[in-house]
Image 1 (cartoon, rainbow, N blue to C red):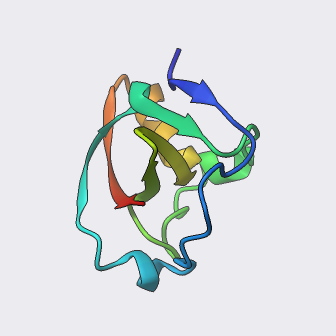
Image 2: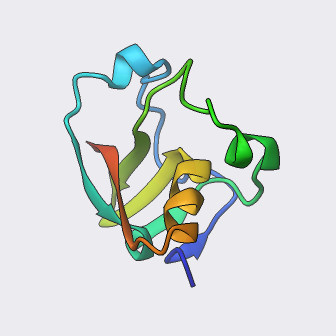
Length: 97
């Protein structure tokens, strides 16, 4: 299993961070893939395979820490790319609510 769980919604309250600029003050840190619960159950395969998938966005995934759980809000393709490269961790910006 790559992730702790696969979800299809955001169980935490709206935090108001929408754009990469909103997330940029949060310092990235290493996160274990096995500790994450996804907030999407599907992936756009073209995003996973794209060479420039982060060109217009943040190069780090966005994770929300809420009620003792880590939720992968944005960056599912980055997390899966890390798993395909046999890595158990990757860098993400983690917002604590």
